[in-house]
Amino acid sequence: MRRLAFGVFALVLSLQPLVACAESAAAQLKHFLADVRAFNASFEQQQFDEQGTLVETARGKVCIARPGRFNWDYQTPYQQRIVSDGKTLWVYDADLAQVTVNPVNTNAADSPARLLGDDFDLEASFTVGEAVSEAGIDWVSLGSKQPKPQFKAVRIGFREGELAVMRLQDNLGQTTEIRFTQIARNPAVPPATFTFTPPTGVDIIHGTGG
Image (tube, rainbow, N blue to C red; front, side, top):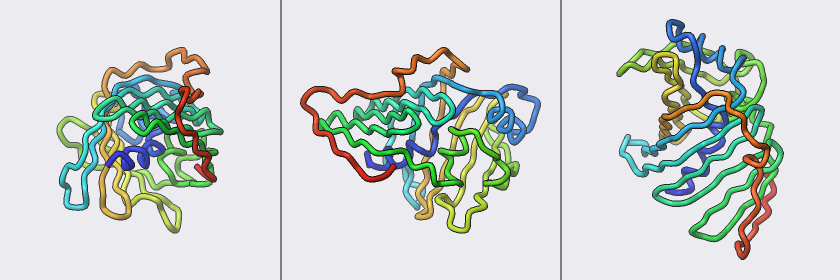
């Protein structure tokens, strides 16, 4: 199930706590896109199959800076880092002693990666709607305007003005849920955070696309 974690990294390029907790989730999302430039957080990522059965739980830390830079550090149950400076994507698998290097794919106009990691027109790519609040979380739903969307459903949840969770359902019915804690807004982030130097002795695989 480790490759599920890799497949989902791009879906959450820039998730961040928001302000004005009295506002709707949609309004908070729009404020995030307008105002938030960087954040650090701890995360828990769960993968569910099409029947809703939990198949994997992973935990780690993430640092993101818009536009398009991120560092996902998966720490348990395996060690994996997914890093991008906005142009190059590195995926380091410690268990396999392997690094895959690809250029970043910027052509996916409806991807949550672009939604949350880049500067663009939200309403040109998505239909934004309010979803039912549950367990103290206010949800905003996003429907892609692309003819062949990458994801069947995307939801982002806020609790008292803070970003709390992102839920993604792919076209096979599998769901990824990522919960964020210990969020720090707009920290000073060294540029080196978003580059990766392969450790000595690991295999380096150059791909053809992001």
